[in-house]
Amino acid sequence: MPTVSVRRDLLFRALGRSYTDEEFDELCFEFGLELDDITSEKDIISKEKGEGKAEGASDIVLYKIDVPANRYDLLCLEGLVRGLQVFKERINLPRYEKIIPAKGEGQRLIITEETAKVRPHAVAAVLRNITFTKERYDSFIDLQEKLHQNICRRRALVAIGTHDLDTIAGPFTFTAKAPPEIKFKPLNQSQEYTASQMMDLYRTDSHLRHYLHLIENKPLYPVIYDNNGVVLSMPPIINGDHSKISLNTRNVFVECTGTDMTKAKIVLDTIVTMFSEYCEKPFTVEAVEVILPNGKTHIYPELAYRKEKVKPELINKKIGISETPSSLAKLLTRMCLKSHVIGNGNNIEIEIPPTRADIIHACDIVEDAAIAYGYNNIQMTIPKTYTIANQLPLNKLTELLRLDLAAAGFTEALTFALCSQEDIADKLGTDISTTKAVHVANPKTAEFQVARTTLLPGLLKTIAANRKMPLPLKLFEISDIVVKDPSKDVGARNYRHLCAIYYNKSPGFEIIHGLLDRVMQLLEVPPSEENGYVIKATEGSAFFPGRCAEIFAKGQSVGKLGVLHPDVITKFELTMPCSALEISIEPFL
Picture (cartoon, rainbow, N blue to C red):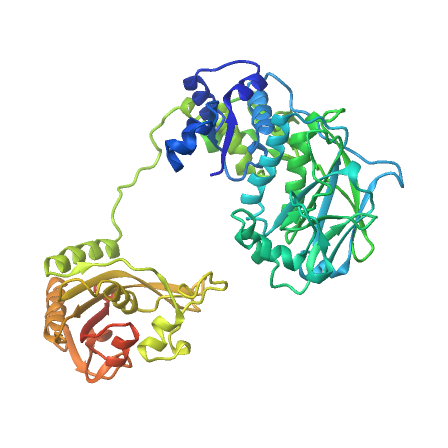
């Protein structure tokens, strides 16, 4: 959950009254938020860097408030205050209005076809005749950063640029050019740089270096120019210094570029609705005409209101209350969802404002009604049906085996369910195509490319990481492996496996064999070819020739045991012999 830090004095001034810390904590809980911490800038620096570094820092009390990840309208002081004031019925929900200038007088943003492969989407708006104070300006910048970290996914989906409109001239052009062709003075710098030089400049910047990878390997970089060729920004990296906003800025040009059009529109709507209250005409936003490469035009921001209908019975049933339709409509209105009863009282019509992008389904409306009603006010009732909780047989068997394997002197390990292709194929002497492995479509690291098809590599890597421990090393794991299965709706299924390893100066095959006998004894499977278990000589790519056996139980193959091949041991960076056992425990249920 995102955490919003607000100054207590500013918050109480905006709310029009003061609260004790306990009272405000209770108010947050009623509204579905959580007061996470009460601190100050000095305390934060003292905790992170020591008391010496905190000298001279501010003692002003800060409230750190946890807000739901999809409530973008609560990520700044303005939205938080507005939501709480509407919730406490001190103000009515404002109506956001889009002002479309006369033809030829408004701003235009032209998108060229070169942006298609880099950052194809852009939306824009103007906050006209806005008045900034130091606190408002800081909140404006902080909201952009919060959105960048949250819905914008660290600028990968959307990047926000804000500019002083009085320093630039439209129409604006969003295009893409080769890095050496882009040259401008970036924000807070004293000289001009080419885009390539900027990449080198910001490679060591603690803040901006995290965004360089988004475009640095692209042949063209996105860039926005004004009508005079002045660079506004090079999204998603940096804005130009020429158009930077200040406390004296009166007209703000807001542009959002990105790879996700839906997110870009939500981000633009959020910024302009939160700060349009400081415009000369509050809650009005000047629209911008965006011209696409195909010549089509769109007007932004959308600031779209939509209506949904929900039956009162559904809300009452889902929450477990029995409120009248008019009472439910009032509860929803307190949550910034203007509602009224229609028909014969069998429907509630809810107007979803542009600030509530989180309302997608009727269940979201029901949740808001429950918050407004108060979770603590819902009457506790005994369920009409009852069941007796019981452990899944497979999990029960797993727990019992864990206890006895530990009692046999083996240490339990818990390894990752994802691994590299090498771990389950090359290192075990087999081909990846024969493993039925489930592949991760976009692995973030080579260590997590596929779901494991065997527990053996995880245990071998664990031993490799603990080679300095006293010998022998005896490890086991009972966990799921995953293989492709076209008959399943998800295309794969899990199997519960038991794997054990013995690592010492001698292979210790007899110890692993003894462990198998003990497991079968616990499972009450006798050593018999007909109704019990038996081992038969076989070959396995991971095992030493002539030192591998297949285990049959209840008429089917359940696994293998043997001495691992020296090549396998070497590939896992081990130096001593190793014996292993791996079986499926599901046939024994």
